[in-house]
Image 1: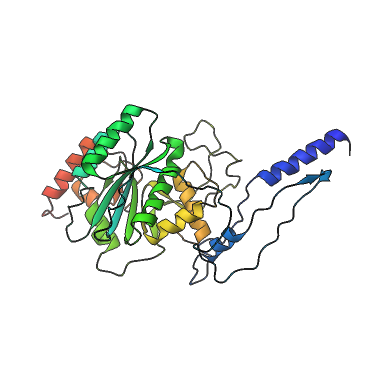
Image 2 (image 1 turned 135 degrees about the vertical axis):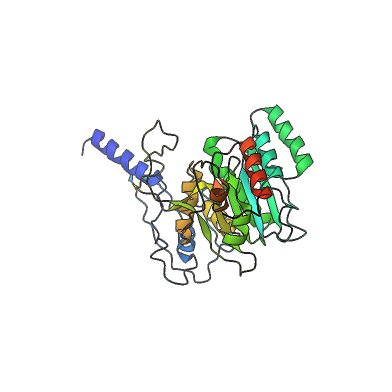
Length: 349
């Protein structure tokens, strides 16, 4: 082999070693009854090899460790691929101290969306609307590059005490960090909650339908539960698309089933599972796809629910009574819809 060919071959092998490859794990459909996430635990326990060169190119050999029957997320010791070590700039650490909530609402928002946050506080996100069940509402943000906006959000937080901010730049491509921030917050400060809703600031949520028809407070709490509008698709390779995914980041032709990030609900135990799985899972900028990747590693299959809509729907009282979420709702529309639905509860459809 001549020098040029040897150089090309060496570079090809180096690139192959440097690429973080994720072992394919059994899907939820193939997971046997009683599956408790040991597939994910096995993956987390695999140590990554190192690469060394001594004269000739040396290719390390991966050795699969023996399965540890006592392995848990708490006792696994392995290098973290994505250490989520962003500090809290604003936190509400005592939100759940008085009484564990039935439902935690995590709302992804941006600094300029004050009107949307206020509309949610005054409508479906009002924590006092359903006195028989405890609801905690939180708005999730990163750090703005505009110091004035950061100061305005801090003042807003001092008034409403419902904002959490972590020290990463708030941007579209950091939405995954924002979702993981919410998972981390629930796992750390509200682990005894029963359910979590993750949604966005332009979503209308029919809380009555969500609480009483879907989650049902009088029934035994579910575990390892995840539901929403389930999407089965693959990566878009067109660089002009908002949802572009490069082959380098995600080489597979299909995504695992995932719930639209506009709104999904899960049992609170899943928050810690996803957060800790993310520490060892290569980050993707599409947060809903990334959560789906983590769920696949955990052997948790998201359930389809027709009440979750990731598109805009023309308003009618009877139609909106049947939904859980509706997308692309302005603050003004949110007020109109909420007022109409609450004032006409006596009307039958």
